Image 1: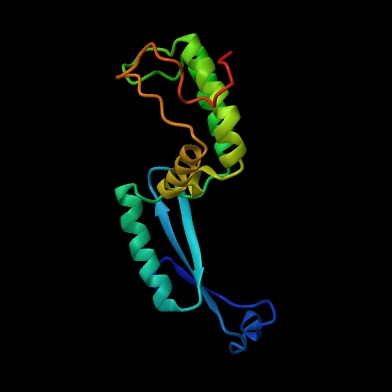
Image 2: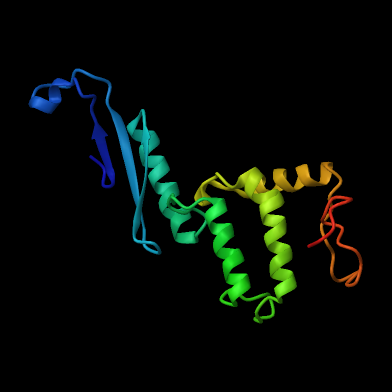
Length: 166
């Protein structure tokens, strides 16, 4: 068998007791992520599909375009972000702590929009297209991104009408 690929037989297969295979086995391919020290695996109906996925996964893991699955959800990650913005452990683009009003604004937006829509998703499953769909949904509701470069003192356009900032 190829390295990093193992055959999986059904529970009732006679090969488990030393006999010949009486099932249609599947193939589990594994790839190791050196950054996190975790295995990534998937099961396939054919050996060739498992080999192809394993090769692609190894390249993607090296490039950083694939991550092993995590148990952390978007809601949990958002809470870490908000807590870090409040206590100064997460810094802004300029490397400075967030101002209290900015941290409160992010907290309101996360709790009002992000957590209800995406909070239950696993962080490792979220893809760029999912975020784009979320943003497109906000825009279809009449919400638009705040552009601080053009209007630094303007009313917050990222909140729906009638919802004053707290």
